Amino acid sequence: MGAVATLVTAALVLGLLAAALSGGSGGGESPDGAGQRTADAPGPSALQPLPEDHPVHGLARRDAGDPLAMGDPDAPVVMLTYADFQSALAARFARETEPELISAYVDAGVLRIEFRNFPVNGPESDLAARAAWAAGQQDRFWEFYRAAYAEDTHLGSGRFSRENVLAMAEDAGVPDLQRFETDMDAEAAADAVAADADEALLLGISAVPTFLVNGHPLIGNRPLEEFRSHIDQLAGAASE
Image 1 (cartoon, rainbow, N blue to C red):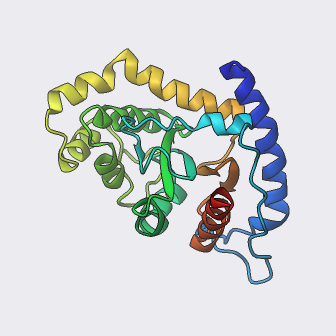
Image 2: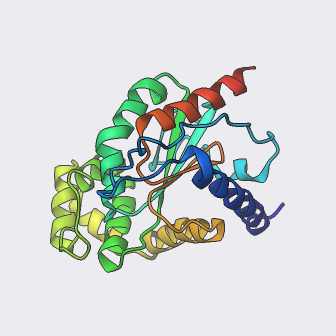
């Protein structure tokens, strides 16, 4: 099956799953966007693993050399993260939830996380995405990612100006800042970001962050328990 056909088929599944998610397992989001369930919202529901040959699994690259990924390429659970560096919800996930997932699941070889740039909030988002990709060319993507998400960002605040992303790269320990600038401005950076964004658009993703956990979506900064429930169930099913 071709790449476009795979994405279209996966998009249909994502749409169905997202509808199910909004009707039950997702819960309500608090007014401040913290992603906490309301008191009367139901907890996560049981997941049925998608068939092994389902096209949605083809979205996971499982490339050991992918600088925008962490974890065992053969991990039983792969979580794709579609995010914008100007997203406050994504920043809170990166600071509050993701470290727990890394400690409990990535380090144990159960979970692999693959990041996808989906800059939906204008020029600063696009520059941040290209800068993150450029940092990855020197094996400093995750260090840049942490620096970028160190605090919440107001849209168009200037946090991701050229001067500031250079400072973030330096803080992230990018060894060659001149090469970083060259890579950030290169056509390859724009193409890589566009490919990730096109994938998200073809899947019908309209909110950041959106996560696909072995094809099952979680939208927004969901509570840690929902991520754990998805991972535990899907990892358990994979071991049966």
